[in-house]
Length: 133
Image 1: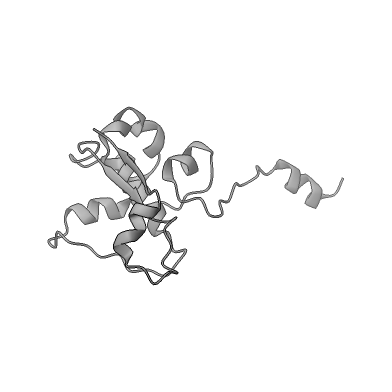
Image 2: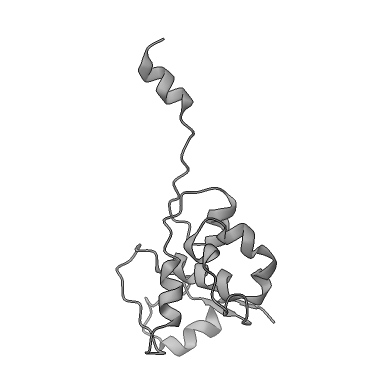
């Protein structure tokens, strides 16, 4: 048996995600995650209370927001260790973790291809809303 075949067989398969923007799903299913949780701590120390996240499409905005949701949501307090173990924020949690009731809106299913005002769009489409109270 040659060394190339042996090396390929001994390596564990790496799971790369494509299009998964749900932090809990990514971590729970063992996908590769590039740790950006250091930014959570930095956001808490930011003097400007209003942050604007401007990034091109497919640059991880939705994934980062679901990460923030898992970190701050009261409903994820019992999953904190499992989700954030080995990540920066799991090793350096802030006092704010899992302290808030989160209200999430998902507008990804809404379209703006009509000439109708955007205000009518939410009433004609169902936006996914989950409350954590």
